[in-house]
Image (tube, rainbow, N blue to C red):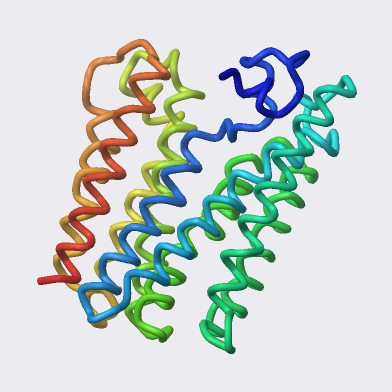
Length: 284
């Protein structure tokens, strides 16, 4: 049966309804799910419980999904619900997702459990407020806004670890840092590829990508210091090796036309590889 009919809004075509209610930031899905998976895996390996992780996952997905239909209903984005039928259909999604999130969070906090998530939630809220503020200040701060938003999304790692083990410790903080550094590098690389799509000569690539190159060096330095002081396991360096190599390789290889879809898939593969290697680092 058509989704529009189920919602009692047959006047809203399926593709239009999909655009109004399904999150469009495909990269953000990875920035949420990979940290969630790594935090959960490490927490379970250290004797954690699976049920709270499942509940947190459902709550996080509901909240993440809620943003798109809520913005469409409020009209805060260019793609907004216009007709009465569209507003009614979008409102159904808003209410359903809100109920799912409320139910899941009620289960998580039942009987005073998982209070460690409260300060974490406050930090996440602040990061999203900062993201919105940076977007309004200037279009030039778009990447900074994305990095600020990634800080909130990657909090899924310590959150999953916390609900599994019942504690927030240095491992939770290390998982958050590692996932945020990785997400920041991905954001910077994708922006570099988009804005340097016409760069051909090596000197032009270097000129356009000097900020990214400095970021790669800074990332490597932070990782080495984190390992040296025992904050991250040394095998975590291997988890970052593919993206560091990918970043340097762009400057060295011959220029290629930008294929956005292929870039998206390659970055997804990088995310999966990073998640697997990071979990293995904490396991070993």
